[in-house]
Length: 347
Image (cartoon, rainbow, N blue to C red; front, side, top):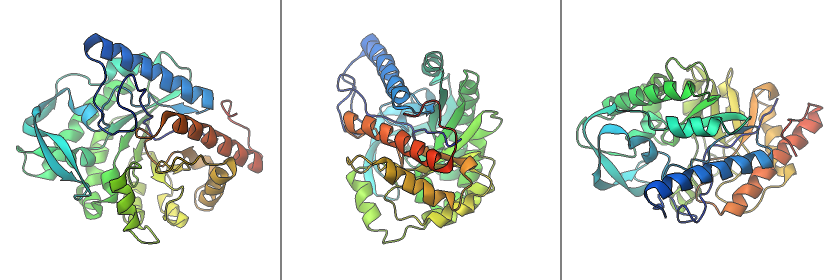
């Protein structure tokens, strides 16, 4: 009960990519890059296991970016034709590949990497994929001319990939949808439907992660413009509660989200974000437990998992790993308060 996990990404080693940078170019090429990525996956998983994380990930070590890493093996995507576009409602600019033809999955993008990882751990393994709305928001479109049609095509490709990864032994497949906190009307009108299409037919645990983004300046500045109370989840949670997705992952630590909004997710497991990815300050076990206490007022403890607010890719490695231990220690303290059996992985 009250398992620990992370949203998905961890910092890459300096020998693999430039530290503390999103979209950092690879430091290796060819066979050396493939070997370096596998080594980095092993390091990430072993660091999670050593910290005591229950449901681990590969740290997204084989992907330059959580969205564009999925697009590499799709037809219709031209990586040579890159455009700088505004994403997340023009919150910041990004250089993105362009859709120039129908999108189709040519072969598995992540199967080999997932099979490699699953064979090397006895822990539950979670794999993260970008959600269709978020991909549609992070790519230039010169073919569909309609974001809904683009998202549906992406959802079909995601579903094919997710079904194949499930067969590799993945315990949880999580779709990352930070765009759900930006395009609130679109979530209701077509976003959840596209998400469900991506997860259609999966028998493993399914999750969706929605948050206020990485701890980068553009996101931090945006958060400061949202005022003292953040109520974006109030519009999205009811639609997610009625969806077929099993779990919802959200941002809680140091956010201005009223804890009461978690009550709108009745019937879902909730990944409670207890680690701030926008700060290098290491949380104390008491601070982590405090967020979990608040969450328990609105979510039954048997439906709670302790997680991070968002991905940790841009953080210093030492800070990220220390935060993993803080997450586990805080969850262990909270379990002890409730008289619950400690996780076998807890410190």
